[in-house]
Length: 112
Image (cartoon, rainbow, N blue to C red; front, side, top):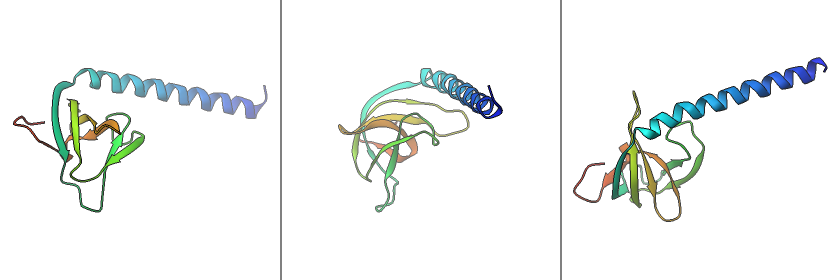
């Protein structure tokens, strides 16, 4: 094995360690969730902007779509994230993913 192959192997192993560690960090937070099961709508988003929908409940997670202001969504559950905002699993029939709870307003009697 030459030096270049050795560097690629070390970089690959470091990447795997980071990916596995991130998986363990996200999983306990997801287990600490609370059920919501209620309709809500996207609010507090500028008319020209959109609420980003993410694959995981974190601002650095992959974007998988967006909801326009006023979009009605079904909120399945939310999780509490220490020293951050709560994140909610939202679905509008076309896109399903995690959004920051501060941009949702309940359409029912209960708070999100």
